[in-house]
Length: 208
Figure 1: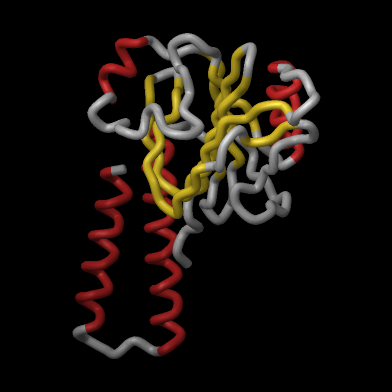
Figure 2: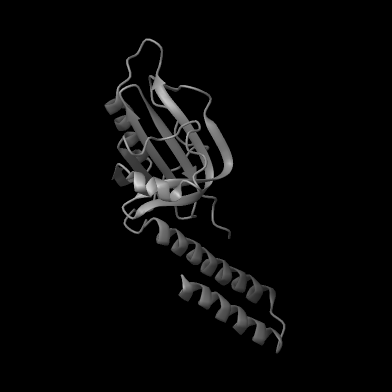
C-alpha cells in the first residue's frame, strides 16, 4: 500500500515539474487522467486486499440486478421490513478476524412464507445457488469467538438491529462477487432452527 501511495506522489511530482516547461496537450491531459485513475484504483484494490483477499476469486462478468441484487428465494420472505442504507460500515468475519467494509447495505431477517415450514438447509442452499450463479465464491465459514466480537464492540454499534447475526452461536457463511469495476459484492448469512439473517454490502464503482 505504501509503495502504491509513493508511486502516486512520484508521478504527481514528475508531471508537476514537466508542466512548468510546457503546456500539456488535451491528449496528454487525458492520458495523465487515465494513468492517475489507474493508480488510484490499484491503491483502492490494494486497500481491500489488506482487509479481505479477493485474489483467488475470479472476476464475475455476470450482469447483476439492482441492489440488493438477490431477492429472497421462493417460499422465503423478510420477517420485518428490511433495513437498507446507501452507505454504512459492516464487519465481515475472515480467518484473520472481523474486518470492516463500507458501502451500500441491505440487512434482513428471513423466514418461511405462511404455511411453509422453515428449513435452514434450504435457506443456505438457495442463497448459495444464487450467489455462485452470479460468479460468487465462498470466502469464510465458521463461528466467531466472543473475544473477537468484544474487540470490535465499540465500532460495531449496529449489532442487534434488523438482520443481525449471532456470530458466536451460529455458523456464518461469507461470499464475495469480485467485479472488474471495483463494485464488489459481499454477502454474509447465518441461520438456526427458526429463521435466518442475511447482510449484503456492495462497494461503489471505482472512479474512472
